[in-house]
Amino acid sequence: MEGIEHKSLTINGINMHVAEIGQGPFVLFLHGFPECLYAWRHQMGFMASQGFRAVAPDLRGYGDTTGAPVNDFTKFTNLHVVGDVVALLNAVAAQEEKVFVVGHDWGAMIAWALCLYRPDKVKALVNLSVAFSPRNPSNKPVEILRSVCGEDYYICRFQEPGEIEGEFAYTGTKRVLKSFLSYRNPGPLYLPKGKWFGSLGDSADTPIILPSWLSEEEVDYYASKYEKSGFTGALNYYRALDINWELTAPWTGDQIQVPVKFIVGDLDLTYNAPGTKDFVHKGGFKRYVPLLKEVVVMKGVAHFIHEEKPDEINKHILDFFQEFSLPPSSTM
Image 1: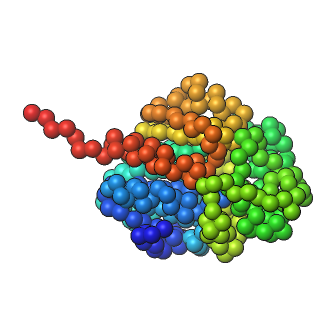
Image 2: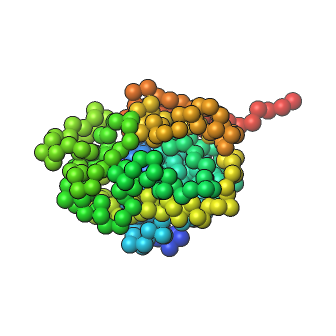
Image 3: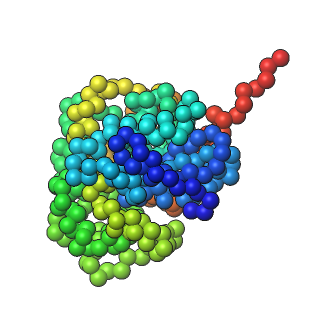
């Protein structure tokens, strides 16, 4: 990522790797699984060229961020990660009263949590792929997923520490990443126990054809980070889902009081999850996110929307944030 400055900051008890480029209004980019800050390579330089300061961290447990206790998934709750984000903002954007935020996948979930806990920190939000999910006071999330999707559903398979890591090791890091990054089935993602060979149901000998937007070199970059860090830190976010549910009881029923644009691909497995389309389009989403300005559903696009259609995503981000960056009109 040419022109980007990299640094390591000691914040909130971890050593956070941060990338930065540009000057102007602050835009924070939060990545998801199975990526790292490299996921924003198409967005950061573009936003810098448009007069923004683009900053992206490797979230705790990911990439070159170190120091988090990866063998203790209870230290990967939304409260911990939002704490990291707030500490980052206090360290590098202390002069900014509020910042712009862009999130994808787990980064989107962290962005929703940031807006819920600390709306005073966020000027506006563009979230990709994962809609806001209000807390269900009656059932823990993993229990719901098991009852609806079964034990082979990928989030359920991620729950037992060490188990899926062993299968990933057998498969090979690069093949695992190729499989996730090229997944385009809008249906649920199942990983049958003992039968997953890194191509989401195919045999270990089946070639994985990369999509046109993803090169071998880009997969190699991601693989180099996971070969170093392992997958456990990233998987811990899924293992902390039920703990999040317990800790966030005080926010049950609360709304996101931040201006939001939401963008999703129509082939995204999250968008096609049971009940999601009705929630997004029939009033539930707007009820919990009253400042929702726009929902964009991109046709023929899957989960990694910011990598698959970077130019379109860049324009959506820029157009939305420029609404909040223009100087106030002069008055007579």
